[in-house]
Amino acid sequence: MKRIAAHAITFEGKTYPMSVFELTDNAEVNIYPLTREIHSTRFITGHISVSISSDGSLRINRLTNQ
Image (tube, rainbow, N blue to C red; front, side, top):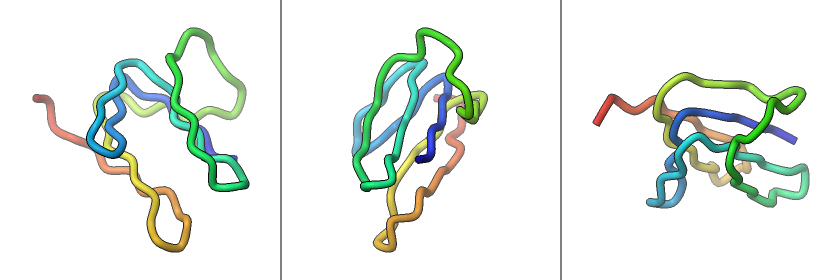
């Protein structure tokens, strides 16, 4: 499982403020509000864009302030 939190996460054209993006071992995506600290969660400051490549890898791009 991979879990990333950020001030803002954009995934498939929708932006989620102060959220957690979770990619499970079964390739399921969960996005939910960051309301507490979660063990083994990487926090990235700012606004990021997240996508999943054709091989199932997580791709993260830092976006400029908008």
